[in-house]
Amino acid sequence: MASARVNFSVGLFMTAGLGLATLAIIWLGMTSFLRKGELYVTYFDESVQGLNVDSPVKYRGVPVGRVQAIRIAPDYHLIEVVILVDDEHADDEMRFADSVAAISNVGITGAMFVEIDKRTPLDGPTPALDFTPEYPVIASKPSDIRKLFREIHDIAAQIKAIDFKGIADQAKNAFNSLDKAVAQARIGDISADIRTLLASVNAAASPERLQSLARNVDGSMEASRRLMDKAAEELTRMDAVLAQFQSMLDANRPHVDTTMGALAGAALKTDAFMAQSQATMLQMQATIRDLEDRLSATAENLEQTSGNLNSLITSVKDQPAQLLFGEPKAPRATEE
Picture 1: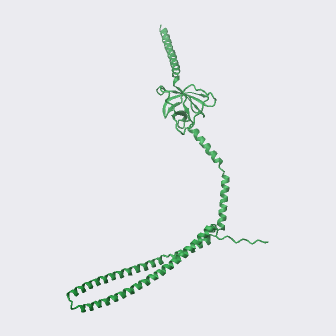
Picture 2 (picture 1 turned 180 degrees about the vertical axis):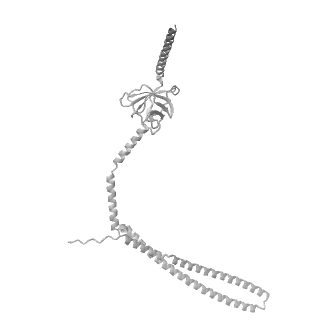
Picture 3 (picture 1 turned 120 degrees about the vertical axis):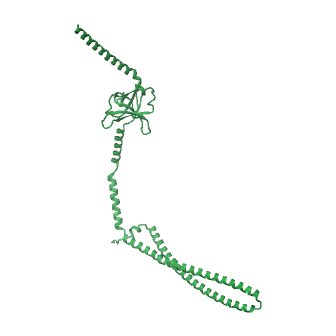
């Protein structure tokens, strides 16, 4: 009796297990069948090494589904990747409109996943399809690794196209020409001429001569100012004398002769002052004349220096090579 009960329990357990397994298989199959409208497909024009079935699919870093299948496209050129999007992300079929998919790697493990993001002007064109896909298509773009290798290949091609030998030959010829020019140029003579010219300019406009001229002008101006001050004082004194004379004339008519005599004395003093003023003016004129002579000599020196500079500039303008090479060598005599 106990053996029959055990057999019944084992048989019931096995039957229940088989039933649950059958229901799970049927549920998984029906789920896959019912979720066919939530499938998307994208096509890559590159190797998908490292990308496997059930690899994650992310939209801007957020997981939205998994890879359903990986196979060769009907044109036997592109790689078809079927993406199964979760229910919560698959309600709107236009959710992935104007988006592009790319293959990205997970760290340094070599595992790959599909990254979906919005299209940018730098993404470039997507692979063209000459067949009708079974599911809605998400456009694709090259992976960052492929872009990197393509840019490295372009850079290598550009470097390879550079004519290094031609550049080296041109540089060598340029240095040889420069050496010959330096060897033929009379740098010492040119430097001596420039030093002589600068010395002439410095002598014509030396600070000592300019300071001397400035001191003479300052002395003349100071003498003129003192002369004007003295003249103003004498005029003031003369006004006082005239006022005093008028008051005396009004007060003492009988003493007019005496006052006239005093006035005559004042006139004599005024004549003496005028003579002294004239002598001072003559001295100032002589000083100004000497200053004019010095300024004329300075102007002549400056004019001579300017002529020398103009001659040098004209010579350099007519024959620019003389600035580096000096006077051309005399023609070599040839035998008849």
